[in-house]
Image (cartoon, rainbow, N blue to C red; front, side, top):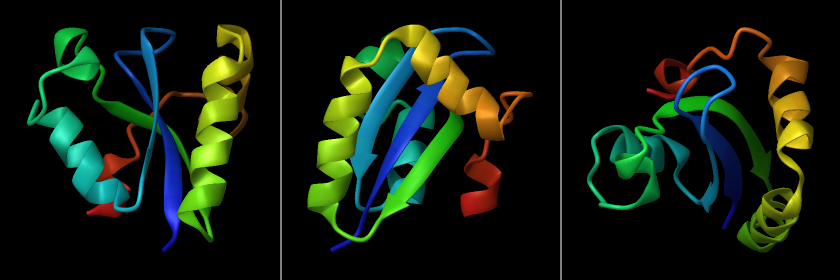
Length: 94
């Protein structure tokens, strides 16, 4: 089973959330629609600003754990490398 690591943001340079999933479109939909009450619903973290595909879910989980330990500025650099305007990539998935 493949997997994705993703970063959501509340706005440009706003609150960030890093997650992992095997179905990116479904999971981001759940975040955007507050299907599961938690951090992203509480802080309105709904913009998909970065994601990466991995051949296995195990690889994705390992990378997510690593990114979660990163400093905030490293995450911002990762986002801005491919998405300098902090566009929401969700529409590209559906």
